[in-house]
Length: 344
Image (cartoon, rainbow, N blue to C red; front, side):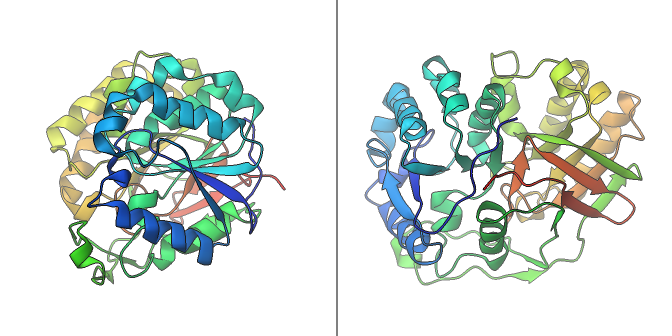
């Protein structure tokens, strides 16, 4: 896999809207300005907003080709060092006909987002580029009052420095608060409570290493069978990343999604699974039982599963690189980046 260059102060990063176009809507554009100021002041980055990124929900929905054009042009622009997604959504899949994988491959740079951006991460994987499953413009960089410390530190430590053997620690606090994205709430901070679980071992033991691949499981049904879904052989020795969306899917749907992965033979190939904290811990215990039940159905009762990782739709979230070697120690409940996802 090709690694992008790490970020440095003064670098240009592009903002793209690849799924939902809410960043440009009049009632939400204040989130853009919060994020832009934070990226400039807290991280020393120069923000380049791609031409269609702020054209609003209706335009973005009607023009998947323009969304893809922004992405391709951001990769082609040599002055841009990173690409950050505005937000997820449910419509990234319609970009597929307009993606040039050679452009991505020949112009490696940091690409980051989560949720429906899972589709883009599988595009990056097909192109052979390491990508970063992590914060978005609207939700994390645009967080009211202040960015969560856990997320801010992840950005600084993983995107701006070499991080071989870097430990991805469990956040000591979390939030299940829902705060409407209304400008009247701009001075309200979410409440943080003490993390009581930390990383949990659902099954398995010992130490596994492998390259991380996956994302938001709600999105998987849209990409299974497409050109970006890896072959069974391409899943060999990978560690599967799974997290769930803000839809907080009923455990029965997680059962169906996992059975699909089992039927595809993916459980036969992978070394283990990392599961994100469910949003607001809804279905926290129920999901655990689903994983154990389905893996038992496929005779995978010893396949290692690490649960309750701060990634995706939980708050706060960290960053996990897709496509580089990670190590999960199930005896010590620790995650390490065995190699840096970036180069100098």
